[in-house]
Image 1 (cartoon, rainbow, N blue to C red):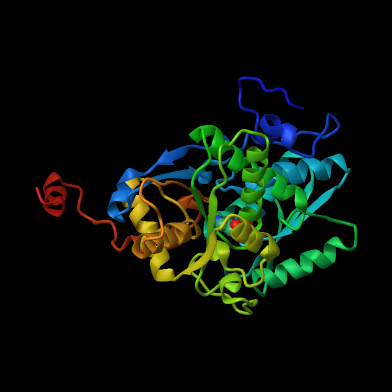
Image 2: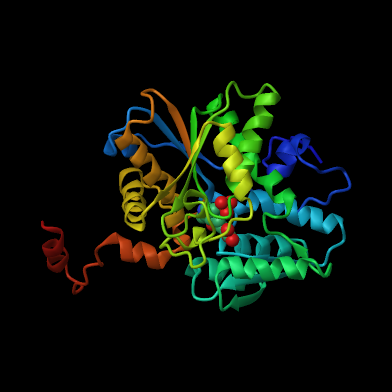
Length: 357
Ligand code: AN7
């Protein structure tokens, strides 16, 4: 399994030593992982920070989100067990990823989506990859409850992050950050929805540190949207609301994992308003040319809060996960941009007029 060839063959091939796989595990991969870590000095300057900020650009995975790291594991292990049908509930990215990896594994895929509340790009992906796409008249938490019940029948394999191998795959992002930086960061920021990813990052950073491959443990700072902030508010939210549909989750499955990561790392779980999210979403696109989906702007908005509060020591090295690509959600992008294209007649004069020449 661990061929370690010069060619990148995905996260299982690269990090097999740290994953529950063996020679008997069929490799279902789309060469996920190995995503860029991009330093964004313009953004830091714009928000008045005195630190290094590096973005782990997970939108450049094969289905354009971080979910592919967990899904290569979940679908490979499901295939190893001889499963024929994988199922998940999703705010959109898990379903896109499950649908793609199931197609590659020649397995059937069923996705349950909150009706009317997923971004268009993600819906297009589930349909294009050929998943049986079910739009549930309820929210994500209700869809996940149904998926758990269906999992108990033993007839389908659940590939939500309640499946522990998803967390195993996702922890490889923490390994890559340490490999790319040549050290662990002082702080790592990320969005929190169902809380699988913050759980995975903490596990990954701890394992790399224990293996002697990272010199320190970062403080983990997770951010929820204010209208969907059960962990911060201390109770499940029955009707979560936020523009960041990816993290519109009221009762996270890995709640405990998130609070552990925050406590053990001397970190923080905070919340940011939709207004703060949209501001950060536009800012990172315009300062550094990085187009992410709204959920990714939650930790950036959280970082802006931290700069205002003075909680980041000068000179810190900070990393943040940009979990999904901006093209996933064209409707919010066009709305947030704040202007429309100029429509002009097809003459040089007309173009000169609108661009002010
Ligand atoms: C872009 O796809 O839950 O805290 O069903 O799509 O690990 O849940 C997506 C979550 C952050 C939150 N950013 O991660 C799903 C789903 C993006 C996301 C999160 C999601 P977790």
